[in-house]
Length: 283
Image (tube, rainbow, N blue to C red):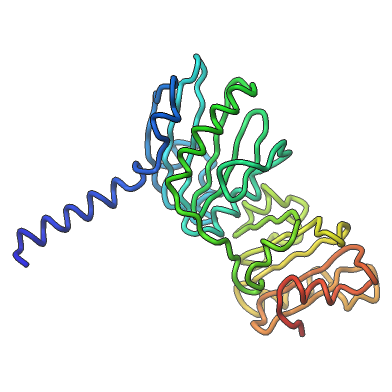
């Protein structure tokens, strides 16, 4: 290969890589009578300027880039913010702590949350937030159509949270599941856990509530940066073996992951719940 050919190949590769975010967008047939009045991309350095102080939580989860479409539809502007996160777990995580009071959970993504003023969807490593201006059913249906066109360009990816969860567990349970990779996610979506985790060396937390058959039970799967961090956390919150009213603790073989079961459990025995949910044996 000549130097010129190699150079042209590199230019082609760089051009296609740079253009890739722009390729993810709505089809003009879906936009219909609407008009794109703004289109912009942002990276980790420019994100602060766009959402004015709200960038930190996206960076905490693992942020790659943001593609913005603002579409004027019948005199009102609808904003489509498509966040490319570093992995599907990050995309699900930001979605899980951002959704509140969903009127609908159907939509173009693998997971969706629709309200009068907002539509949120997650698919593969992408989190889509659509902000409506008028809040009418007509506007929502239009936004839903455009969002569907936009996400249709993204290949679906099986969502697997990884260790310590068993494969396919999120497809087999009906529950409210939240995920955080830091205190900002906790403060936004699990505020009642802030005091418990503040100052600890935790890395991630999965919060699961409303499990069918265990509606009054809360399960938290917390991973720490090291064994000492997990040890300090256990001492700090005073977990016991279930003889009293405190949460029950299960510690896995990696020494840094804890499963904490709190609340009423069928038969007063949370062992089957913890083993079934994670698919691992507890110590």
